[in-house]
Image 1 (cartoon, helix red, strand yellow):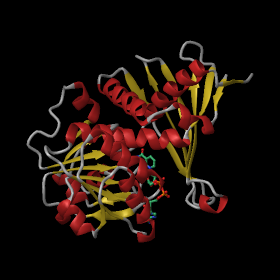
Image 2 (cartoon, rainbow, N blue to C red; image 1 turned 120 degrees about the vertical axis):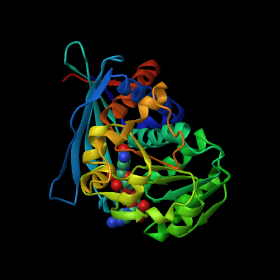
Image 3 (cartoon, rainbow, N blue to C red; image 1 turned 60 degrees about the vertical axis):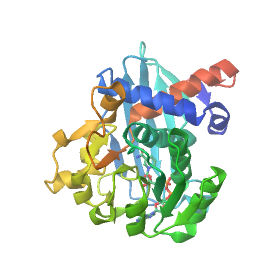
Length: 320
Ligand code: NAD
Protein backbone atom coordinates (compact mmCIF):
# COMPACT_ATOMS: atom_id res chain seq x y z
CA UNK A 1 0.00 0.00 0.00
CA UNK A 2 1.00 3.62 -0.38
CA UNK A 3 1.30 6.09 2.49
CA UNK A 4 0.98 9.86 2.08
CA UNK A 5 2.12 11.52 5.29
CA UNK A 6 0.22 14.39 6.87
CA UNK A 7 3.25 16.66 6.44
CA UNK A 8 3.12 16.21 2.64
CA UNK A 9 -0.53 17.19 2.18
CA UNK A 10 0.03 20.97 2.27
CA UNK A 11 2.49 20.76 -0.62
CA UNK A 12 0.15 18.59 -2.71
CA UNK A 13 -3.43 19.72 -2.22
CA UNK A 14 -4.84 23.16 -3.00
CA UNK A 15 -8.17 24.64 -1.86
CA UNK A 16 -9.16 24.86 -5.54
CA UNK A 17 -8.54 21.14 -6.11
CA UNK A 18 -10.49 20.34 -2.91
CA UNK A 19 -13.38 22.49 -4.12
CA UNK A 20 -13.50 20.69 -7.48
CA UNK A 21 -13.32 17.24 -5.86
CA UNK A 22 -16.11 18.04 -3.37
CA UNK A 23 -18.37 19.73 -5.93
CA UNK A 24 -18.01 16.68 -8.22
CA UNK A 25 -18.68 14.13 -5.49
CA UNK A 26 -21.78 16.04 -4.28
CA UNK A 27 -23.08 15.87 -7.86
CA UNK A 28 -22.29 12.12 -8.04
CA UNK A 29 -24.17 11.55 -4.75
CA UNK A 30 -27.26 13.36 -6.03
CA UNK A 31 -27.28 11.36 -9.25
CA UNK A 32 -27.08 8.09 -7.32
CA UNK A 33 -23.59 7.10 -8.51
CA UNK A 34 -21.99 7.46 -5.07
CA UNK A 35 -23.24 6.68 -1.58
CA UNK A 36 -22.09 7.05 2.00
CA UNK A 37 -22.15 4.29 4.59
CA UNK A 38 -23.85 4.88 7.96
CA UNK A 39 -21.60 6.90 10.25
CA UNK A 40 -20.15 5.45 13.42
CA UNK A 41 -19.40 8.19 15.96
CA UNK A 42 -18.85 7.37 19.62
CA UNK A 43 -18.11 9.34 22.76
CA UNK A 44 -15.44 6.93 23.99
CA UNK A 45 -15.47 8.14 27.60
CA UNK A 46 -11.80 9.12 27.52
CA UNK A 47 -10.40 12.65 27.08
CA UNK A 48 -13.94 13.79 26.11
CA UNK A 49 -13.12 12.41 22.67
CA UNK A 50 -15.54 11.67 19.85
CA UNK A 51 -14.18 8.90 17.62
CA UNK A 52 -15.66 7.26 14.56
CA UNK A 53 -15.66 6.16 10.93
CA UNK A 54 -17.08 7.75 7.82
CA UNK A 55 -16.98 5.68 4.64
CA UNK A 56 -18.51 5.32 1.22
CA UNK A 57 -18.20 4.17 -2.35
CA UNK A 58 -18.15 6.30 -5.47
CA UNK A 59 -19.10 3.91 -8.28
CA UNK A 60 -18.24 6.46 -10.96
CA UNK A 61 -14.70 7.24 -9.73
CA UNK A 62 -14.30 3.74 -8.15
CA UNK A 63 -13.23 5.32 -4.88
CA UNK A 64 -13.81 3.09 -1.85
CA UNK A 65 -12.73 3.59 1.74
CA UNK A 66 -13.18 5.34 5.04
CA UNK A 67 -11.87 8.04 7.30
CA UNK A 68 -11.13 7.03 10.89
CA UNK A 69 -10.60 9.59 13.61
CA UNK A 70 -12.44 12.28 15.45
CA UNK A 71 -12.33 15.22 17.81
CA UNK A 72 -10.15 15.42 20.93
CA UNK A 73 -11.04 18.73 22.62
CA UNK A 74 -8.06 18.72 25.02
CA UNK A 75 -5.31 18.25 22.44
CA UNK A 76 -3.80 21.68 23.01
CA UNK A 77 -1.90 20.21 25.99
CA UNK A 78 -0.20 17.83 23.51
CA UNK A 79 0.47 20.67 21.07
CA UNK A 80 -1.86 19.03 18.55
CA UNK A 81 -5.02 20.28 16.83
CA UNK A 82 -8.25 18.84 18.19
CA UNK A 83 -9.26 17.07 14.98
CA UNK A 84 -7.19 13.95 14.22
CA UNK A 85 -7.87 11.54 11.36
CA UNK A 86 -6.47 9.22 8.69
CA UNK A 87 -8.14 8.28 5.39
CA UNK A 88 -7.84 4.71 4.06
CA UNK A 89 -8.48 3.92 0.39
CA UNK A 90 -9.20 0.40 -0.89
CA UNK A 91 -8.94 -1.13 -4.36
CA UNK A 92 -12.58 -1.36 -5.51
CA UNK A 93 -11.76 -4.38 -7.74
CA UNK A 94 -9.98 -6.53 -5.13
CA UNK A 95 -10.69 -5.09 -1.67
CA UNK A 96 -6.97 -4.72 -0.96
CA UNK A 97 -5.97 -1.66 1.03
CA UNK A 98 -4.48 0.81 -1.44
CA UNK A 99 -3.43 3.83 0.62
CA UNK A 100 -3.34 5.58 3.99
CA UNK A 101 -3.47 9.35 3.70
CA UNK A 102 -3.10 11.92 6.50
CA UNK A 103 -6.59 13.35 7.05
CA UNK A 104 -6.16 16.44 9.24
CA UNK A 105 -5.49 19.16 6.67
CA UNK A 106 -7.71 17.34 4.17
CA UNK A 107 -10.63 17.48 6.63
CA UNK A 108 -10.27 21.24 6.94
CA UNK A 109 -9.99 21.66 3.16
CA UNK A 110 -12.93 19.40 2.32
CA UNK A 111 -15.13 20.94 5.03
CA UNK A 112 -14.36 24.44 3.81
CA UNK A 113 -14.93 23.29 0.22
CA UNK A 114 -18.40 21.99 1.17
CA UNK A 115 -19.60 25.30 2.58
CA UNK A 116 -17.98 27.09 -0.38
CA UNK A 117 -19.98 24.90 -2.80
CA UNK A 118 -23.14 25.92 -0.95
CA UNK A 119 -22.14 29.61 -1.07
CA UNK A 120 -21.38 29.40 -4.80
CA UNK A 121 -24.87 28.04 -5.52
CA UNK A 122 -27.02 29.59 -2.77
CA UNK A 123 -25.64 33.02 -1.73
CA UNK A 124 -28.18 35.81 -2.22
CA UNK A 125 -27.51 38.01 -5.24
CA UNK A 126 -25.15 40.86 -4.41
CA UNK A 127 -24.09 39.36 -1.04
CA UNK A 128 -21.40 41.61 0.44
CA UNK A 129 -21.00 40.80 4.14
CA UNK A 130 -19.69 37.46 5.40
CA UNK A 131 -20.57 36.61 9.00
CA UNK A 132 -18.40 34.09 10.84
CA UNK A 133 -19.64 32.30 13.99
CA UNK A 134 -16.69 30.39 15.41
CA UNK A 135 -12.98 31.12 15.51
CA UNK A 136 -11.39 27.70 15.95
CA UNK A 137 -9.01 25.79 13.69
CA UNK A 138 -11.57 25.28 10.89
CA UNK A 139 -12.77 28.89 10.79
CA UNK A 140 -9.80 30.27 8.85
CA UNK A 141 -10.16 27.58 6.17
CA UNK A 142 -13.87 28.34 5.98
CA UNK A 143 -13.33 32.06 5.48
CA UNK A 144 -10.66 31.54 2.81
CA UNK A 145 -12.79 29.08 0.84
CA UNK A 146 -15.82 31.40 1.01
CA UNK A 147 -13.75 34.34 -0.22
CA UNK A 148 -12.47 32.21 -3.12
CA UNK A 149 -15.97 31.58 -4.51
CA UNK A 150 -17.64 34.91 -3.73
CA UNK A 151 -16.46 38.50 -3.61
CA UNK A 152 -17.18 39.94 -0.13
CA UNK A 153 -16.60 43.55 1.02
CA UNK A 154 -16.36 42.84 4.74
CA UNK A 155 -16.19 40.08 7.34
CA UNK A 156 -17.95 40.30 10.70
CA UNK A 157 -17.50 37.68 13.41
CA UNK A 158 -18.55 36.39 16.79
CA UNK A 159 -17.13 33.63 18.97
CA UNK A 160 -18.13 32.32 22.40
CA UNK A 161 -14.47 32.70 23.42
CA UNK A 162 -13.66 36.29 22.31
CA UNK A 163 -9.92 35.82 22.82
CA UNK A 164 -9.95 33.56 19.73
CA UNK A 165 -11.31 36.28 17.43
CA UNK A 166 -7.77 37.29 16.41
CA UNK A 167 -7.77 34.25 14.11
CA UNK A 168 -10.70 35.74 12.15
CA UNK A 169 -9.17 39.23 12.14
CA UNK A 170 -5.81 37.90 10.91
CA UNK A 171 -7.39 35.75 8.19
CA UNK A 172 -9.58 38.61 6.96
CA UNK A 173 -6.52 40.90 6.89
CA UNK A 174 -4.65 38.29 4.87
CA UNK A 175 -7.54 38.28 2.39
CA UNK A 176 -7.50 42.09 2.24
CA UNK A 177 -10.93 42.37 3.90
CA UNK A 178 -11.94 44.59 6.84
CA UNK A 179 -13.01 42.69 9.94
CA UNK A 180 -15.30 43.71 12.78
CA UNK A 181 -16.18 41.74 15.94
CA UNK A 182 -19.92 42.01 16.58
CA UNK A 183 -22.61 40.49 18.80
CA UNK A 184 -24.89 37.78 17.42
CA UNK A 185 -27.96 40.01 16.80
CA UNK A 186 -25.77 42.38 14.76
CA UNK A 187 -24.21 39.48 12.88
CA UNK A 188 -27.65 38.11 11.98
CA UNK A 189 -28.86 41.54 10.94
CA UNK A 190 -25.89 42.53 8.76
CA UNK A 191 -24.50 39.33 7.21
CA UNK A 192 -25.64 38.15 3.78
CA UNK A 193 -23.78 34.86 4.16
CA UNK A 194 -23.17 33.24 7.56
CA UNK A 195 -20.83 30.35 8.32
CA UNK A 196 -21.16 28.70 11.73
CA UNK A 197 -18.32 26.38 12.75
CA UNK A 198 -18.34 25.86 16.51
CA UNK A 199 -18.63 22.94 18.92
CA UNK A 200 -21.89 24.29 20.38
CA UNK A 201 -24.52 22.07 22.00
CA UNK A 202 -27.24 24.75 22.17
CA UNK A 203 -28.51 27.36 19.69
CA UNK A 204 -26.30 30.40 19.07
CA UNK A 205 -27.98 32.10 16.10
CA UNK A 206 -31.67 32.70 16.74
CA UNK A 207 -34.52 33.07 14.29
CA UNK A 208 -35.12 36.70 15.25
CA UNK A 209 -31.45 37.56 14.58
CA UNK A 210 -31.78 36.95 10.82
CA UNK A 211 -33.55 39.82 9.12
CA UNK A 212 -32.46 39.84 5.46
CA UNK A 213 -31.97 37.46 2.53
CA UNK A 214 -29.26 35.23 3.92
CA UNK A 215 -27.47 32.00 3.20
CA UNK A 216 -26.29 30.10 6.27
CA UNK A 217 -23.70 27.33 6.06
CA UNK A 218 -24.03 25.48 9.39
CA UNK A 219 -20.86 23.40 9.57
CA UNK A 220 -20.21 22.70 13.26
CA UNK A 221 -22.99 20.20 13.98
CA UNK A 222 -21.76 16.76 12.99
CA UNK A 223 -22.86 14.69 16.00
CA UNK A 224 -26.08 13.86 17.81
CA UNK A 225 -26.80 16.56 20.38
CA UNK A 226 -24.69 19.33 18.84
CA UNK A 227 -26.56 22.47 17.77
CA UNK A 228 -25.72 25.95 16.47
CA UNK A 229 -29.06 27.24 15.18
CA UNK A 230 -32.51 27.94 16.55
CA UNK A 231 -34.81 25.19 15.15
CA UNK A 232 -37.29 27.94 14.18
CA UNK A 233 -34.59 29.42 11.92
CA UNK A 234 -34.01 25.98 10.35
CA UNK A 235 -37.77 25.69 9.80
CA UNK A 236 -37.91 29.14 8.13
CA UNK A 237 -35.04 28.31 5.77
CA UNK A 238 -35.01 26.33 2.54
CA UNK A 239 -32.78 23.50 3.74
CA UNK A 240 -29.98 21.83 1.75
CA UNK A 241 -27.46 19.32 2.96
CA UNK A 242 -24.63 17.07 1.87
CA UNK A 243 -26.44 13.85 2.90
CA UNK A 244 -30.06 13.75 4.09
CA UNK A 245 -29.62 10.66 6.32
CA UNK A 246 -26.86 12.49 8.23
CA UNK A 247 -28.66 15.85 8.27
CA UNK A 248 -31.66 14.40 10.13
CA UNK A 249 -29.62 12.28 12.56
CA UNK A 250 -26.33 14.08 13.32
CA UNK A 251 -26.70 17.40 11.48
CA UNK A 252 -28.30 20.71 12.36
CA UNK A 253 -31.70 19.52 11.08
CA UNK A 254 -31.90 16.82 13.80
CA UNK A 255 -33.46 19.35 16.23
CA UNK A 256 -36.08 20.82 13.85
CA UNK A 257 -37.00 17.24 12.86
CA UNK A 258 -37.31 16.16 16.53
CA UNK A 259 -39.48 19.20 17.26
CA UNK A 260 -41.75 18.31 14.32
CA UNK A 261 -41.00 21.65 12.60
CA UNK A 262 -39.73 20.09 9.37
CA UNK A 263 -39.69 16.63 7.78
CA UNK A 264 -37.04 14.75 5.85
CA UNK A 265 -38.92 15.70 2.67
CA UNK A 266 -38.14 19.38 3.27
CA UNK A 267 -34.39 18.76 2.85
CA UNK A 268 -32.60 18.71 -0.53
CA UNK A 269 -29.16 17.33 -1.37
CA UNK A 270 -26.90 20.19 -2.47
CA UNK A 271 -25.71 17.96 -5.32
CA UNK A 272 -29.14 18.36 -6.92
CA UNK A 273 -28.44 22.09 -7.22
CA UNK A 274 -24.96 21.37 -8.61
CA UNK A 275 -26.54 18.98 -11.14
CA UNK A 276 -29.13 21.56 -12.11
CA UNK A 277 -32.01 19.29 -11.11
CA UNK A 278 -33.08 21.67 -8.28
CA UNK A 279 -33.51 25.43 -8.64
CA UNK A 280 -31.60 26.21 -5.42
CA UNK A 281 -32.49 29.48 -3.66
CA UNK A 282 -35.54 30.30 -5.80
CA UNK A 283 -37.67 32.82 -3.90
CA UNK A 284 -36.52 31.69 -0.43
CA UNK A 285 -35.42 34.50 1.92
CA UNK A 286 -33.17 32.25 3.99
CA UNK A 287 -31.28 29.21 2.71
CA UNK A 288 -29.42 26.79 4.94
CA UNK A 289 -26.68 24.31 4.08
CA UNK A 290 -26.51 21.68 6.81
CA UNK A 291 -22.93 20.51 6.30
CA UNK A 292 -22.55 17.29 8.26
CA UNK A 293 -19.35 16.06 6.59
CA UNK A 294 -19.57 12.87 4.54
CA UNK A 295 -17.08 10.08 3.98
CA UNK A 296 -17.22 10.56 0.22
CA UNK A 297 -15.79 14.08 0.63
CA UNK A 298 -12.80 12.60 2.44
CA UNK A 299 -12.33 9.87 -0.15
CA UNK A 300 -12.57 12.36 -3.02
CA UNK A 301 -9.82 14.63 -1.67
CA UNK A 302 -7.66 11.67 -0.57
CA UNK A 303 -7.90 10.12 -4.06
CA UNK A 304 -6.77 13.42 -5.55
CA UNK A 305 -3.85 13.63 -3.10
CA UNK A 306 -2.83 10.06 -3.93
CA UNK A 307 -2.85 10.87 -7.65
CA UNK A 308 -0.65 13.95 -7.05
CA UNK A 309 1.68 12.09 -4.64
CA UNK A 310 2.18 9.28 -7.17
CA UNK A 311 2.91 11.79 -9.94
CA UNK A 312 5.51 13.53 -7.74
CA UNK A 313 6.95 10.20 -6.51
CA UNK A 314 6.47 11.05 -2.83
CA UNK A 315 4.02 8.30 -1.80
CA UNK A 316 5.86 5.76 0.41
CA UNK A 317 5.26 2.11 -0.43
CA UNK A 318 4.85 -0.36 2.45
CA UNK A 319 3.97 -4.07 2.55
CA UNK A 320 0.87 -4.92 4.58
P1 NAD B 1 -11.68 24.06 17.58
O1 NAD B 1 -11.62 23.24 18.81
O2 NAD B 1 -10.43 24.54 16.96
O3 NAD B 1 -12.64 25.33 17.83
C1 NAD B 1 -13.87 25.17 18.50
C2 NAD B 1 -14.80 26.33 18.21
O4 NAD B 1 -16.04 26.11 18.90
C3 NAD B 1 -14.29 27.66 18.71
O5 NAD B 1 -14.90 28.68 17.96
C4 NAD B 1 -14.79 27.68 20.17
O6 NAD B 1 -14.88 28.98 20.69
C5 NAD B 1 -16.17 27.06 19.97
N1 NAD B 1 -16.64 26.33 21.14
C6 NAD B 1 -15.96 25.47 21.93
N2 NAD B 1 -16.78 24.96 22.88
C7 NAD B 1 -18.00 25.52 22.68
C8 NAD B 1 -19.25 25.41 23.34
N3 NAD B 1 -19.43 24.61 24.38
N4 NAD B 1 -20.29 26.14 22.85
C9 NAD B 1 -20.14 26.94 21.77
N5 NAD B 1 -18.98 27.07 21.10
C10 NAD B 1 -17.92 26.38 21.56
O7 NAD B 1 -12.54 23.19 16.54
P2 NAD B 1 -12.54 23.21 14.95
O8 NAD B 1 -11.57 22.23 14.43
O9 NAD B 1 -12.50 24.63 14.48
O10 NAD B 1 -14.00 22.59 14.68
C11 NAD B 1 -15.16 23.33 15.01
C12 NAD B 1 -16.36 22.40 14.93
O11 NAD B 1 -16.54 21.96 13.58
C13 NAD B 1 -16.24 21.14 15.76
O12 NAD B 1 -17.45 20.96 16.45
C14 NAD B 1 -16.04 20.03 14.75
O13 NAD B 1 -16.57 18.80 15.19
C15 NAD B 1 -16.82 20.57 13.58
N6 NAD B 1 -16.39 20.03 12.28
C16 NAD B 1 -17.36 19.74 11.38
C17 NAD B 1 -17.00 19.23 10.14
C18 NAD B 1 -18.05 18.94 9.12
O14 NAD B 1 -17.74 18.33 8.09
N7 NAD B 1 -19.27 19.38 9.30
C19 NAD B 1 -15.64 19.01 9.84
C20 NAD B 1 -14.68 19.37 10.78
C21 NAD B 1 -15.06 19.89 12.01
